[in-house]
Length: 348
Ligand code: NAP
Image (cartoon, rainbow, N blue to C red; front, side, top):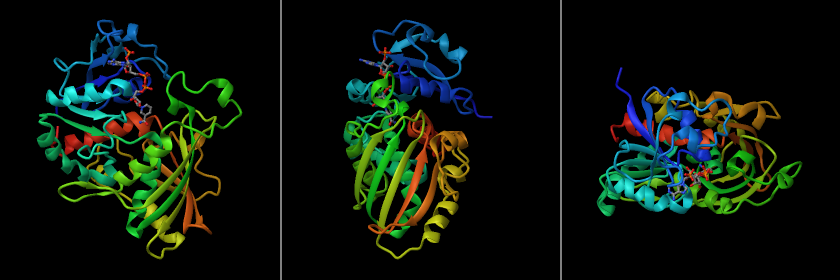
């Protein structure tokens, strides 16, 4: 047995930070030994600084940790970042500069040309940009990011279809309220209602998808040229984002080809048997009314993407529905899988 690697969480007291704390509990490779937050929390015990909002109890061994301020120094070499977006740019850069590997869930660096926007099943080779990142920025550490919680659902569904030549994508999301953090969307807005606007979300989905599905040329990360158009909606669902998707391809394909591509899709996390990797990253559900957030999002520990209803589209070529767990595969679980891939590849 390898000794566990000590890890820290920046922004550990917040909503996403709590998801990291929960997801890392009992992790076979990583041991959470350090938590960072703002000056308001620094110096307090984690249990005093944190209003725990997740189901189940705060892990006892984390509750007694003393919160540090988010400055590099005594933090472990590997840190996960869930800091507030207003401060994440400077904090993450300071840690990378000081030699830390920052595996971030924040949006701040996702679209930087030299930062991988990593989905281990889709673009593990994008980690090849890290030497250029270090050289350009003069960092001994690094920053690696994971996508927005709706983007990851769309890209995991599109990944197996890239072989057919994706030309145009039209996606309409139905996004859970947990994606809005705490206190999130006012109850008077979301109860028995749909809010057809999530600030910045459509733009993020469009450009992040192109970057993730793009290629690492050896010198740069080149975005996929496909056009992506997103409509993002908040719906009264607790966990699980749905993405109703239409796609046009450059090659002639049949519905069976798409279903076979979903069914047979496997990638590096599965081959390396990474601890958080789902056995099958994309699961096609043949029932006419699946996947559904309440019934399916938690399956496979929330780490898989569920796809259903593949059928012809009179405007594009095909349409289908995709589902993913927004706070697991869309946040903490995605970042932890990224770090597992880096560890397995000797990059930590
Ligand atoms: P949150 O609940 O408000 O938590 C923010 C965290 O940042 C807290 O730990 C807070 O510490 C800390 N913080 C605030 N100001 C700070 C400062 N000046 N210096 C150091 N730490 C500071 O926010 P959240 O909902 O968890 O979101 C956190 C991040 O995750 C954001 O960047 C957000 O964009 C991103 N996010 C991503 C997804 C996704 O799609 N993957 C989903 C939701 C959120 P205190 O408790 O001490 O204030």
